[in-house]
Length: 184
Image (tube, rainbow, N blue to C red; front, side, top):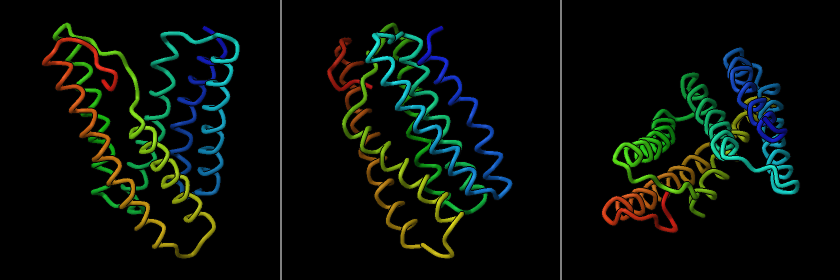
């Protein structure tokens, strides 16, 4: 185990605490834990790159921690009706679809090299902004429906676009049996 991996595991451990805070209606504290998770994500990435501490385990732990936190926040806010159910389903379904495609390619002995698309990075940024922004709105504002409406539309568009591009790359990979630059 190295320091970046320990930080990623710490981020995974922040997930249940953050969800508990959301369910308890402690949106300000949930927002602070969300920010802590984001800062730790930057720190572990910096340390791994700067000190050549990248590991195969870290390549899986880091995105797993990010996805666990984001999807858990979306589901929690959705169950509390602070996030549209259709958006929660869309965000979670995209991730399940991508993970399922990767697992299927392993099963069929056509493993993929994990490489995020630029669309996926923009999508993740938009999801982070919407999740964090919604937590902040719930904690410190009385009404910012406009933020949720605009953010939901942007996240929905980027989620669908990202899923479509990943599935296109995955289908090409499976048809050719070789990795493509844009494979998920």
